[in-house]
Amino acid sequence: MRRSRPAPARRGPFTGTGLLVLALTATLAALLYPVWSYTQRPAVAAASTGTASAQNAQNPQGPRSPRGAPSAKASAQVPTRFGPLSALDRTFLDAVRTAALWELPAGRQAESKGTTASVRTAGQHVVSGHTFLGRRVTDVDARLGLTPPAAPDAEQKGWLKELGTATGKDYDRAFANILRLADGRILPVVAEVRAGTANSLVRALADDAEVTVLDHIRVLEATGDVDFAALARGLGDAGTSVPAASPAPSGSPGAAPGSARSSAAPRPATTYSLPPAASSPRPRGTAGGGDTSQRQAGDRTTATGDTGAAENAALNR
Image 1: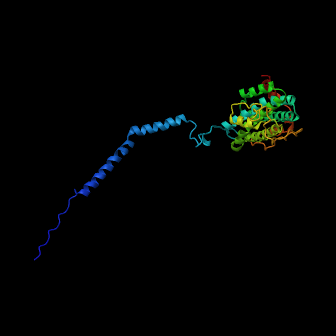
Image 2 (image 1 turned 90 degrees about the vertical axis):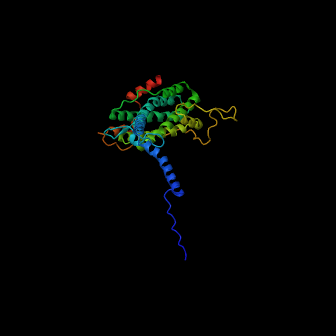
Image 3 (image 1 turned 45 degrees about the vertical axis):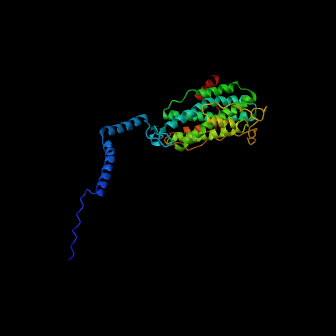
């Protein structure tokens, strides 16, 4: 007769495997608890709020774009009956006004001091263009209630002084290179304003400024005196006046200044026709035909009134 085996005794919870699972659970809890409890502390929450407030105080212009510039929504704008007027719009208006204050006397000077017909004709274009733009920006400033600059800036005064002391071919080179640099700097500003302004008066002025600046660039380059290597350096350094001509390249000792210009530079022409007056639609909200009359070609030929007085004063400085 077989004897039955006794049933195996049940194992309790404190076996080796159970103890290992309990140990791992306790370790995980010990690691997570400090992280959870730290985020719940009042002092930490207050510090986070204070940091965000400090960052907002240091950046009153609001959130910034990835490139570091203020976002479009954060740009300060002044409401007007012609549309919002941004800070860039006001900078553009000041730039057009100061350009008239120094380029008008420079253009008149070129009409008499230029040694070639192309330089004298370029001076004529500068005078007619900035006479027109000077009157246009004066009218826009008045409509918007802005106070325009009364004199050129320090760099522009320095350019006038440099042109005043130059003579002969040195003058031709200085005139062509200095004004070409100035026009190269302002053209991107004009394009940016025209692309983004919400103000109808500023938009119309940007149309006229673009036509005028491009015309000046063409006639200045057509003199054959623009040193494009020096121009590139000047455009890369906005705080430095472009020299009259760049030094001769190494390997060409004794070369005359300006002899290293590209052979593709336009040849001087003997005559040019004046550019037509810009004609863009009259901005909404304007009364009467004042804008139309100011766009006539006759406005581009003589400088009168406060623009003429101001630019003569700049030349005498």
